[in-house]
Image (cartoon, rainbow, N blue to C red; front, side, top):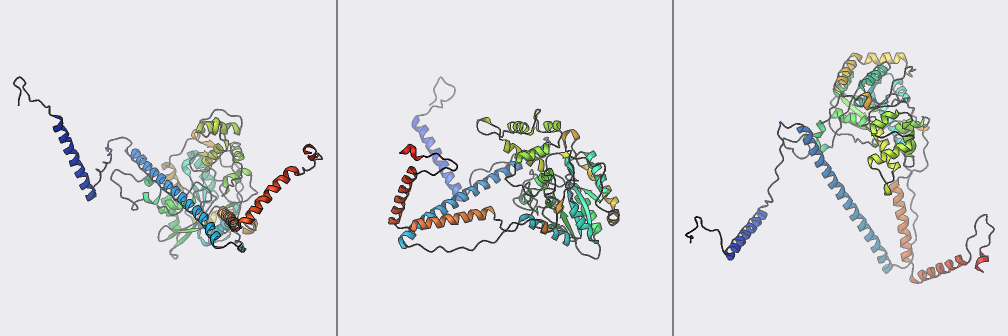
Length: 535
């Protein structure tokens, strides 16, 4: 009923009517949810945030979003693996606890312990790497020595080059990798210096991502997603393939190309760049590649990847630190930092790491640790972690530093061999391709990079007999397995002992303890009588 004085009807209602309406709404929603579950329809799918084409830095935003997704997936996989490991450990412990109880019930006598045969000695890794490099040199028709553009002279091996040039049919080329980490003027000087001895090709590898991010593999992407593997370009891949195809003779169907060089020079990443697919394992850790691997680039070119060259112990300590394939954990990282800082410009180091003036390497590591947040308890600087961080940064493929070519250098290669190599290879094509690649690459300025005042040819080992082999070298996993087996045998023997023998052993231990208190062990080179105080 409308009230006579009011223009509009009132919206007031009784409480019972309002509660009935709310109850019916709840029941309706519940029925809708049930039907959706039966049909398999869950919540509404989240809409992808679409970025307009006119937005600035669209590609960078999408690339960052893709990287975040990858990090989340990697974290989930790591957590899953850790859970599986914990479950496996718990099962092993439960099985070990159950086994001795079953043995007590069934058998009370001791079982004779059978002597297990000794495990065969494991081959020294440096020896196997040397053998693999020799196999690559023998099998390949053309050999590419990969050099680091930051220190080309230090990444050259005189022994390997001489071994290749001894055979008349083999051809040797130099590949100057990581040209994007060196100033342009310095790069041109090094190319001129190396071209006087052997034909060199300027190269810059592309940073490949996992196979699921490459086209045609894994989940399909939307139109707004960008493949991260296409984010970094490579320079010199087309020119290198062009040079290799020109060296192919029409008689031979396929040509074998071998890669040699010291660790972390970029051999495996060079193969991935030429193949445009992740074929070889790549990592910042030195010594990732330990076995030779054949990769077919196309119908006529076959590339053989090799492990790093073995460094001779006769080299100076700085070269041993930078070129050796394996770094032992016992090695002091602080000494490695002092060796590198000795040959660097102090002001450039301060600008690179944003650190104030320092007097010695220890003070530099202290400042670096506070700057990067590498701290222990009570705010103390973790010098060991700072030293590892500096060495990883220096050995990796991010830090920009450069060396100067020597003013006077006596080449270990004969002029006849150099002229023969230049005749076999068309040097004009190489020079043109190098100029084109140098113009395309973005090089750092000398002010933003560090000058390294140390450059010397590294002596390597190719003869297996020169490497000292230990009688028996066991890996860490094998040692842990042996320790666990010994502990299991000791536990079985203790569990199989009868109760009377256990009581006797406990009483003997008590008497031994009492005797040891009355008669303590005699100290060496000490005439004092301890029994005088106790009597």
